[in-house]
Image (cartoon, rainbow, N blue to C red; front, side, top):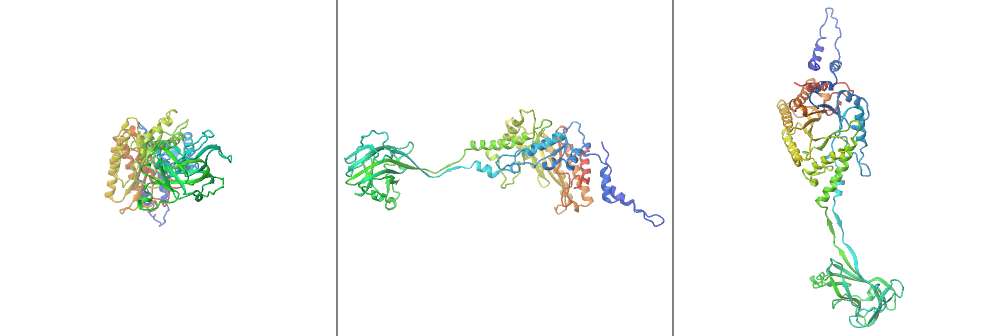
Length: 579
């Protein structure tokens, strides 16, 4: 095991005191080194981070978070990661929004490239999030299950024409007179019915209504007519089963004139409404309209139907008596089963694509956050609750099955984690209880399996002693509870900030040496508590949130922006060395 010198702060102070002496000649010899040089020399005496890991009996791996775009560049960040860490964590690099292509499919090339780079470099790659309520294509998903609204439409059917009749065939008349099926004199429409100088008489037809409809569903009737005589008289009439209806119009009102002898297709139109539509309130039925009596509204067939001109000399050809009805507006909701099928397929597109993109002949991506932040209550435009459509347990079980089925034929055994982001202001112990209860429920089918817990830990050292004592207690309780689950436990996105006694974060360039010393001690405490409480064979590892810090940032990291070691480098080493 490597030996670590006393705290870096003490080292720097001793170096400063050593140069304060003045010789007998009043001559000062300048021996003092700049503080940053002394600190750098002190930190450079340490070995590579991963060399401090005791790997006996544990799968523990030290990882660092790095955006995939930076990882694949293979520059100084890449080389620093390879020499100091076992794994790279791409958590957050890919989600359904940032991989979406214009055609609505996903671009998995980034994930595939990162997996290949990691395999070639011999470093383990953690794949990231597969199922979450956040970062989703919510507007698109909601559109997939929009109800289908069918507006009111007028349809036609139940047409009476004479194409199947023999020439010379006749129909009975309401008041005597002659008619016969003849060839259209204009040669336009095959066979038609000729009315020969009828006197207040109309042909009678038997009408079988459309199956499922009754007369009250119909909105009217149209008729083609070629008029020779009879445009006036006492007007047009409709007769239904012996009851005559006047509707205030004659043939002339529809544009017909005697001797015209020209077809007007659909030239006669009579509108049907329900009884009382106008008369119930004392109104007058408009011209061209009849109210269908309640005694007739449920008829499925009309034994005798007539439409014609009540003239003393109605002479005309008629054709195509067409009955119309309205299709009522429909609001068709998709069933719960249909919605579940839709969203299962959407899960398959994303989860299956991501997992398969991580397959590599040398070393496939095995560790994934199958369910991310299930305790998160955030709701925004990119929030989508899979559980509403696949069930509280069903959505997780579906995600697990899709992930495992994707690689079951390529010999890859996945390690699936439920991940949860926690910070020092969360009730960590309570969150652990909730998380464990969720996993137990998901695994209640005795088929689905979660391999472990991944805690994304944003830690804060508080300069308020009481708060800090509480912080440390929460960390210990968190690991104690997770240790009893019998599952792998991983800490990722581990970061460290410092807050003053008023709860305000202190920028790294404003921190005193004492602040930094306290922060690195707290980092060591967290890592040691993890190694202390989590059983050796369940210690999957720790992942640092980022490798380098910025002068205006708040997080202490192992390296400066120029990749010089910082004080946190020592804190991580202390954390890796068990007490």
